[in-house]
Amino acid sequence: MDMILSGEIDTLSYDLQINILKKRVSDQMDVIENTELRLKAEQAELEFLKEEIRKLQNEKKEDLEILELSRLMGRLNQIITVAGYSPVVVKSTASKIVRRIEELNPAFDLKKHCELLKKMI
Image: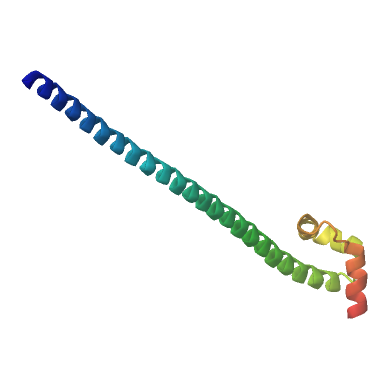
């Protein structure tokens, strides 16, 4: 009878240990699942932040180009006035300025700009 009782206790001991380990496995799986969800949320936040950086860098670049274009146009307008509104003279005198304006604003037309400036003044 002692052997049977001892055998039952060993079985209960194993069952208890197995159940404890199963519970730990279940808890660990919950931790992993929650960690995966947090990881996905953090990755989404990271992508959002990277996109915001890209947008701000583009806005900064555009603003700097607008500022540069404004300064170049001011200088060009002075040159046009001194050159008697002649696009040929302006192009030869201020070729670097004209070229940079055309890079920043591909639709820029020096001849039309000279004519418009002449009408305004």
